[in-house]
Image 1 (cartoon, rainbow, N blue to C red):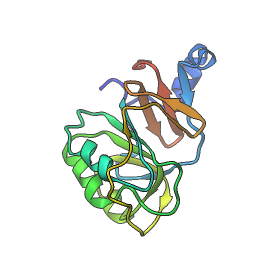
Image 2: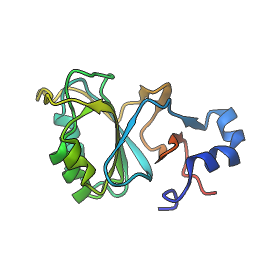
Image 3: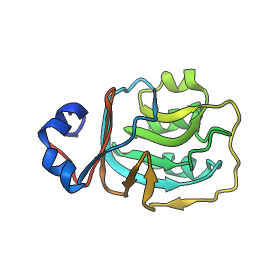
Image 4: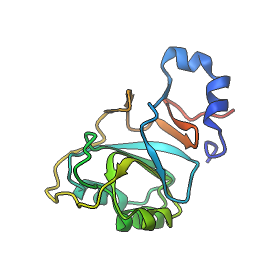
Length: 168
């Protein structure tokens, strides 16, 4: 995947015209880094849920093919919607990363997985299991609208979303 070695700061410096046009957006720096993969990139798959992780599991049971799951969990800080078992599943199925606009748990297990995870924080309580949510819907997280099929680039400097795959 051409996107993996791109440094987000260099991408911003080299693509000011894409930033001005809105084709390249930076997420607000609200996420913490988890997982062994500190740098990841890939095409986006979106999901909207609230304190429920049934649909998160459904996505991660699919072959990831280097994609990044972006989960709008409504910013909830009351429970975790991703844990160690799901992170292991994502790793085994070839997902590049997961961005969670909510909390995760089993941090030590997730940190042992070869996957990139960004989340608002950790919480020991598990989520509901009702299966409610929206797959492939545009999400608005960290000040940015993100759509299925866009490209996400994450490293220690932050997270970028682009309408197309970037090559520097």
